[in-house]
Length: 598
Picture 1 (tube, helix red, strand yellow):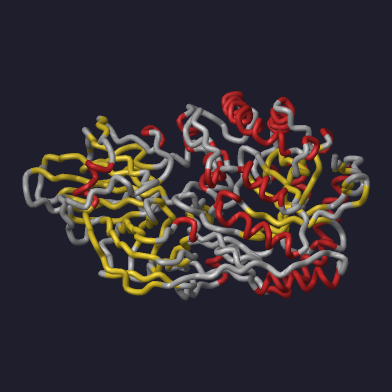
Picture 2 (cartoon, rainbow, N blue to C red):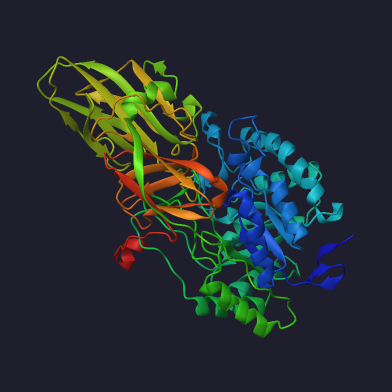
């Protein structure tokens, strides 16, 4: 049986072992492509794969668990082991990862006064219930049980959030109670404040650091911290940021391949490494997260390409080959192979088959829910997507002034089917003026959850509830008697195209096409406004004309020989009579000054 120890060096079967790891998130890659990505990691000469485990996809509703398909962490670990790769697993309740709510499930927000990521007993009880199911599945994959997991993370960059050491100890105890024997680690920014707040070295929990440059300086700070705590542990960069994530309406962030390879070399001269990311993949569905600049929310895009060594599709980039050349020069004994490369297909001018307005088909999509005052997504047990509110209002004047009080994130206000105003989070509450044409107005408000915050001070229960939180006022009073349509839009199977289509309303557009051979492709959305796309009924993610991406990646595992279906949900009243599939992604050129990008 293989053994792994953390002494002054990492020891594998008693011999020094340098961890060469790359991050591949199974939940961002179609299961049919796991082998492709893992093989390319092994072909580079690496020996380990690292992955987070997002709580919110495995327990989307309290007590309802999912470990099938793209959620099968066990099959992912087995595929890695079959290729000869060890694994580093990060099953912490919070993952950040530019993922919806940092991996926390939205149903936690229904818990009154819950304090997330803390020793709050109510939060820990939910973690314990989750771990009882999750860790039973991970336990057989420990190295001591014949599996391939080297280490387990306790919490993720906790030093950038809190300093509740009782919480960290409790998470470690919950893992141990479920039969996880470790070794355990924490990962934090490599400076004194975060290391002090986010680690528990006194409990033999390895300290690792996250950074993307200046290896000698960052490792020196970590070394001093460990020495101060009487620990002689090996140095490891648990997240070497070889690229970066992207936000809507901002330029794609790129990093020079040769410079990246040189910085990786500097890390390897002093310790071990995990490349974040090795293959970034895709935020399928509505699972993109949101960052914050000041008080402004900045949702991240669907693509999680990350400018990684493998592109979003999983093919090697110039960065991959620059790292490969550097490794061969520094460690000529490493076994390297040629990487696998997938092909793509294109298909031009797929004609529109059907179209229907949301307001014409919404009653077939979901069962409406009545309440006197507007309810939030969480109160309706909805995690992500859109929420449509409707009410009838008796007109009192020739001009009516409405205000939506406290809502998130993006609001479209309709009166009698006509779009009157679109407001974003920081504009909500501004006056919306309507000039009614009859004595009763039908008010419809479409609210989009654009992604919950995944990092920082706004990662709280109070700030991340979505939908209308307080109410809607006309002049000086709150409106009542609301009909709610929770539009999670996880699939498109209930869309009925027999209804009417009305110009400039949110609508569904259906396209059908036939394939003789199936390969990856990209759908060109450069002529559409904003919305999401379904491929053979599965939601593959959001698009938005502001860029920087104007296409969505379609893995071949979602396509089939014969007839295929694409449905576009578009909220801006913009559509095309035909669409095209392309071999490469489509981008928008965006100029922005450095100060705005910080």
